Image (cartoon, rainbow, N blue to C red; front, side, top):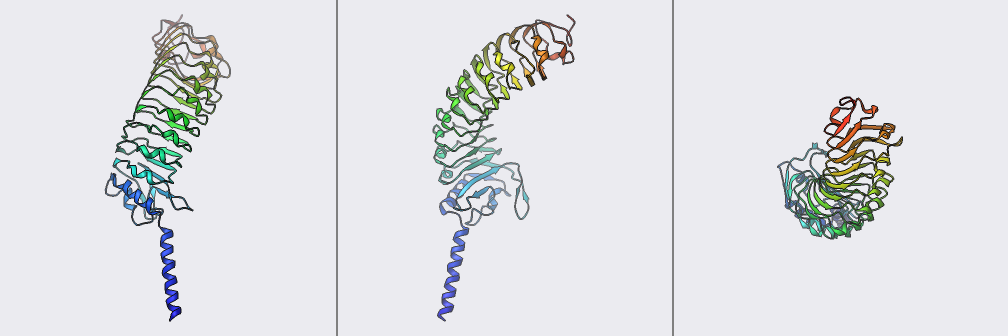
Length: 364
């Protein structure tokens, strides 16, 4: 009899232990449920799978660390198919706000909440306390307010994207403390003020997108110290002053978009003999002549200098470039013959200048 009692007790203990192992942390479970309560979705939504006490198993968009069973990732994307054992699932609408309770997920390393459009409110200030965060992607919502002032505390952060929202205010000064950041995307918001002068501290950055804001002031020369930078988009802002000549000496910079700003001065000679293959300087207040700096190493898929105050001739050295795909020099004050190599280019690329001539325009 005693043996049967001992066996039954052992089984009960094993079942209790097994249940505990299968459950996620009670604090994480509570935080997720509070997070869920601040968001609203259609009847057949992601949150239908958020049932039971094991948030580490079959809760759509939630992943846990295998060893600690603490929540490590929240990934709620509008559009992609979430595959479960039952059937493929495509999320629909979601609204509400990001609850500060998310900050109680102390082991969170990835936070992705993208393209829901209906999610509003502010980024919780406490998000800077999540010291393990490596990825924050809040693209494509209606999030307002400002970026957290102390975001620089997130020393492991490698990706920060808050593009296509309603974020205002200035870029926090502490952002330049994110020395492991490789991808920064703040496009299409309402950000004002200057780019931090010490942006060059972001030594690991490879892609930086600031377009479609109201950023003002000069382009910091320190950007040239970001030796891994491949793509830089500062277009559609209120930037002023000259283009730093040092941008043309960046070893791997491939895309440079500075169009639709208030930049002045001359085009740096270094830009035309650099590694850049997509260069857009259109819709600014640049003056002087186009530098005669083209050579065999020049390879441009796009070269747009339109809508400026450029004068003088088109450099003859342009014919020696290895490749120039799309070119637009229209709406300037250029004069003289168009190089023969561009006789088959669309006439609109050279229109509205003072006295350019030759094919595809009228004969000289």
